[in-house]
Image 1 (tube, rainbow, N blue to C red):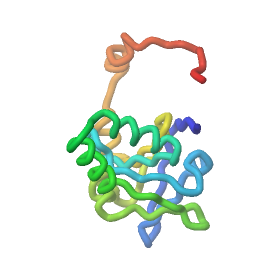
Image 2: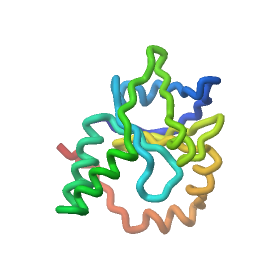
Image 3: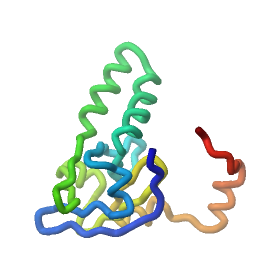
Image 4: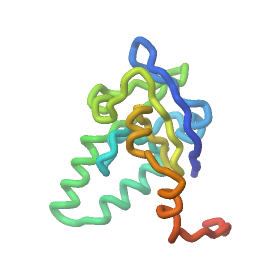
Length: 149
């Protein structure tokens, strides 16, 4: 499974298509899942199909009965399968654009199992931290150089 990292700015063309950054293209594959964020962040998430299945299953398995059915229906409503065109561009649905407040530019951010698409100004607002904030944020985080298999 791919692991994404780094950031890259892209511009929308006149037809509101954006090129998938080359560093993310291979890992996302020939088709991938686009999803509106579910934790209140104004962004759109892109998952390779394998990572999407794991993510989706973890959400659906967290509930049962009527709640599980509602979760599945909601996921169907806020996701879509995306197939880039021959030039590697994707079109983002208007409701997804509005959710992420995307305009002329998009910041693609690699975050492990996914890529998030942000309005660069919103990214700056949501991720405004100082070195002191980092120290507090990471103070209880453990580190291991062992690789999971």
